[in-house]
Length: 290
Length: 253
Image 1 (cartoon, rainbow over the protein chains, first blue to last red):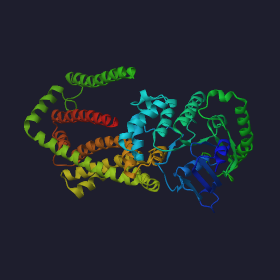
Image 2: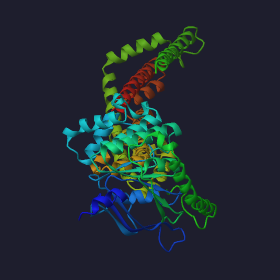
Image 3: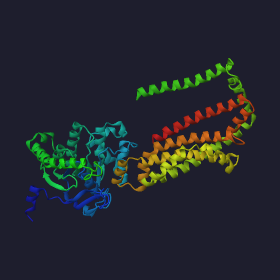
Image 4: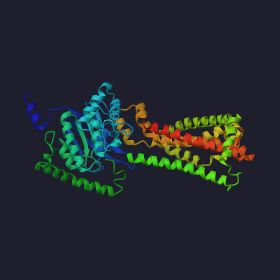
């Protein structure tokens, strides 16, 4: 019982497992039909408290599907996912919140109303609403826009607010589905820095889907590299840099080494994925399956 | 936004100017007898006819019959259109099944069936109410289907991930998302009911504003006919302004 302290410092495995994915497969369409697609094939993954994990892979490798299964928005065809030991059978808004790709702020509500309604849906007592909302808005520097409507803000500001909404929700886990995909590169980098800082402050566990290599390296503790469809875990890359991370991290040789390593890992998969897209028999359904 | 406000003022001026111009052309044509008074009576004659109408006592009863018919027709159209539209929009299959059917029915000139309405509901206001309600039903139903089936899937997904209950989803996501499209249907339906009831009265009825217009035409009393027509036009303009105002107020919430 004396040893664990030392081991914890070296491999970071002292924190409890929050999300546990066991042998999850997902097939879209009837198994016998030639229209059916195996999106995920026997994926197992443990995510620890406070970890920032990126799911990285070519388009259509099932990374968004895996995120939706963890979030309870999609059922797994086989295998199981657990959050804090509970089997996930539907959305668990008390434990998990999402930040989606598109700005999913409701355009008919102001920013504050958007936060309030999310907290209301979640069942958070009304007395906590204003405190949580203002804290989260301040943390992304958007407090002065609280009473604006989303379409009065720029795309970058909207995604900043959208991210803050995820943070304001009373959950320990944040699932992010390519939240920065619609943004230009500069805005993306700045938001990435903010996210790294926020993560260090809130201690939330984050699962982040991306196909940007630099984003994955800059943000993650662990990068789960997935294969082309059917999605399997190809390998796991540890980044091992404490949060919050400064932009200087991107200038370190280790950053480009990791980035190149990821690129080498992904290159074959991306080629396989593009080949599958050109061939309608092996990839008969959508290219946007994530 | 300020540039737009200025434009709105200029737009309003042009709109009012258009109405004034129409009035002046009427006046000029009638005063110079360029058109026979049988087709286009002098505005002053129309005004005198209008004054006689209003003091005559039958005016308000005719207006009452027509307005009551419009309100009843519109009420039935709105309630049935919203209910049917919402139910159809609930599943993708029923939308695919019923939406083209309802759209096809709306494309049929329902006016052709007007004699059947008279046969079934008689010559009194009931036939006009039924006719207006049937015509007005379609835009409400179609826009309700379009509004609710067009709610962005990403909003529903986000709300679901936050744990929204069914009623919360309806109240805070589906309803506000569908609202603008549904309101457009309500507005179109209102003017269809308005036109249907008046048109129905003009074709075949024993009372109401439309009946009075047709009657004045048959008796070759153009001044009285135009007095009614101008009254209807002014009423329509006022109602349109009221509806636009209510609509823009509604959109803000």
